[in-house]
Image (cartoon, one colour):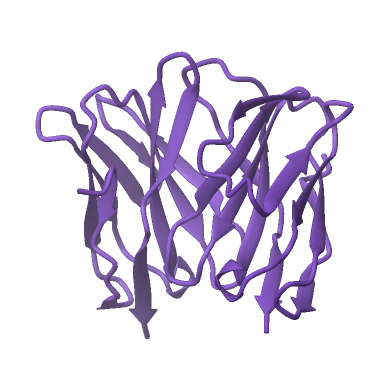
Length: 111
Length: 116
């Protein structure tokens, strides 16, 4: 089983729709969680951190479910510019931090 | 604030040749990472430096890959000899400090390597 798993998609949704995708992680000792966004042929960029209480940034909402070991990203009122690959990142801390990326979920917003 | 600088942007070589990539992290960032990203996959960590010391190189194919960060600032990653399966984007990232809580990564534009 992969340490971090994501549905690769692609998710193809119309502009204005709400879309959500999940990411599951296998190690219950995981301590920090993030969503990164990667545009085609570009580098990943931090989208948002994910906290246990859930957090919102404009049209984006991230949730963490420690009991079921998954995080989610919800995008409301999607825009054409939201088309990208969304990477789930999990960090484990012990003697050194271990940063693990998921394979990414491709999202395509159509007019 | 200047971002993470990487060069070259693209590199095409034949198998068994050597190649080197360079990275200059954001000023003041103690931690530097090299990732390999194969098309359709997420970034895979090759090596992580804290200042000029290696923190994690468990996934670095040491028979052909090497990396250094001698003065704790910029870094080079070398492949010698290259194989076809090394074709990928090589991403350098840096973070301010390993606080153990919010370790946010800032990536360079990457070097796209094609091995023919």
